[in-house]
Image 1 (cartoon, helix red, strand yellow):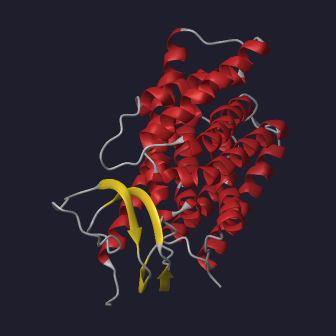
Image 2 (spheres, one colour):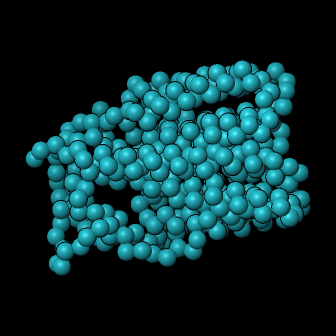
Length: 353
């Protein structure tokens, strides 16, 4: 069988594009959440962000090309909602109230490091020398930001620690979400957002946290709709094509977008260190985005269901009558061995030496 190149290459390009757009939308919300969340309770902020996320996702309406969630996914959905839609945004909101938006935005790059490590440990996703160098550059950037925070200015140690906690929690959430990326993204985002908003609202009520009013309330909901709801749908589509680690590496663009917006809004304390850190992060993102993974590999026989096309080099079963475009149904893959560029997508989660 000749090497397969175009289908997987197209899927990878689409995944990269989805990840970049998702990162840009999410990154732009960080300085906005700091501005409109001033004086608002951390869990109250999380509630509004993920209420907006539910609006951005829209009620799930299964399309022919997407498999629906089942009972077996409910436990994982509850866990990622608690981590990613309640605890992580609350840590972010609290941290933003105790540090500058510029430093906080860039420090969120820690999520990439944590996600790469989690994906490596839990899923054995491959990582080459370029990825290792990129992670090292991000660590160096975080050290510079820590030095900036320790030197006075707008950033406090506890604030930076809270941002790091948000990055750690979101990284665990992203890693645990990977198996859900094969299902209808609107259903996953909507379910996670509703569960997270309800949990956060309950905690905010128990803690008697202050809530915003008027424009601030509407702005936080809007940030959630675009930066969390729509962004997460695109993130899940990217994970489907690229795997958890590479999608997270591209998502490192998000903190850089947030940092640029924060700088434009007037947060310029310690700008020299931030610029150097930003350059390190930017080069790290480039290394991740351009890393190629190509080797001869074997697909074991498997029965599963997911959205697929018949021109991707992996789905050659027959329909009577023929089916065009993306669709979903239970199907079987026979054993196959071939060589082509690929990511850690649904069909390439094999082990590596």
